[in-house]
Amino acid sequence: MSTDMPLSKILDNISQTIGNTDLVKIQSLSKLTGCEILLKCEHQNPGGSIKDRAALQIVKDAIASGKLKPGMTIVEGTAGNTGIGLALVAKALGFNLIVVMPKGQTPEKERLIELHGAQLVLVDACPFANPNHFYHTARRIAEQNEDYWWADQFENTSNYQAHYQNTAPEIWQQTDGQIDAFVSVCGTGGTIGGNSKFFAEKNPNVLNWLVDPDGSGIHNYLKTGKYVASEGGSFTEGIAIMRLVENFKAAKIHRSVNLPDKDLVAISRFVRDQDGIVLGSSSALNVAGALFAAAKMGQGKRIVTFSCDLGERSYSKLWNPEFLATKEIDPNNQDIADLFSRYQASENYLSL
Image 1 (tube, one colour):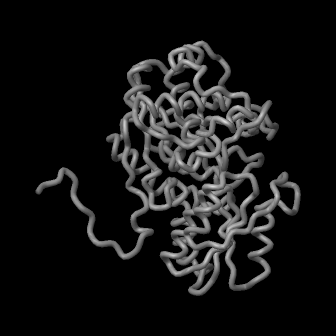
Image 2 (tube, rainbow, N blue to C red):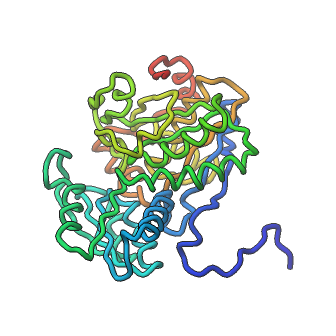
């Protein structure tokens, strides 16, 4: 029996399977737009998300610097996926993990953090200025024990370095350096920071697009220099923070657009039905952003974005008709051709 793909060698632990994910053409949207829309399949990572990359880099760099020593416990505040990635990496490399998470995230993520062997601490969701915010709570827990180490994914620049050193070079190799645009949502700033910095250095003609959901202030920050929330809100998780962090400072962004949840719902159903691709909420927003970029850039462009995590992690919100009804969103009432036409006519985006 023969195979078209070479088998990997025996690896020392599960963390070594992180990275080297596939790049897949979304055939339906590529045909619709006349562009080549490519999806980097980060759900293939062992923890099921792109956050595995940041988790691994953060832990490896901390070990190398001597800040994280054998027997210590890692502490982190997260909306979910970083906690899952850190739990996997921590156990693989011999550490325990305490995850502080705001209530209200999908129960799928809560279960997975505990399934991967981490201790989960749930706190009430509240503004960042509140000392009980999950970020501040994680920091306090870490400071209370000298054998604890705080990962601090928001300010720890190992986060963006994971993508600058690994993710973006993978994309560059997979495309032979031939891309016209890169599209990403923004949470901690690590993904968009590391990738956009790499692409800007490799080819200044690559347009780096940020796509922001309703209720976020990042789009407004790029426009005005101030974090002011846009109208409405979004059910997306782990993105759209309301403050400037170190990882985002590395980003080289040329275009920014704010898109509503109803667009990402429509996109998610279309690519599932046409391509067999089941997206999570942030991934669906990425793909909607790629569609918008295609609409504004014209035919013949190659646009890369991310499938950030497994779509099943968004089952209770994005894929739940009862939940969507509470947001007054009908998943079946928006035609993708009409959406693309609306994007073509829209001037509601920012050029930097």
